[in-house]
Image (cartoon, rainbow, N blue to C red; front, side):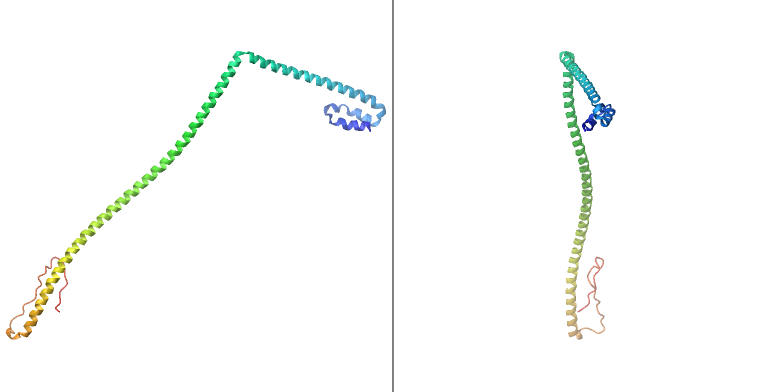
Length: 217
């Protein structure tokens, strides 16, 4: 039972436990006879592990002393200190320049955006100017048409006034002729039947504007 427990305990030892496997097998077969052998092997393994641990500790202490010595040497060397200070200064300058470069990039992006907006505004202005020219041409055309219509209206108004005067004169002449015809019927004995009738002739100027013929009432 003791050897079995030892076997399970030493399974986690890794490489160090590999050399104990034959002994563990013997122990499991005859635990009473193999126990001294087992104890001596374990003692040797423990001694070896302690020696290896001490060697590793010594090596670690040596490396730590070397590192401290290098750090002390670096602190005592003024040239190295100067170089370190210069390096820190260069780092600070580099950070400042990087910040300025970043700001310049931001400004450049803003300028590019403004340029794009300006280009869009210029295109919009050109379209507005073109539309303005088209509207101006249309307005000029409407003004010309309005003037033409105004002139035609004035001419028509003048023609209507002339026609009104002619119509008034014709109406008066018609009334006069009717009166003469009426008086001629009453006084038919005074007029010779063989006398020719005087033809009616309108005093209107036929060359100015065409006018409808006036029928007697």
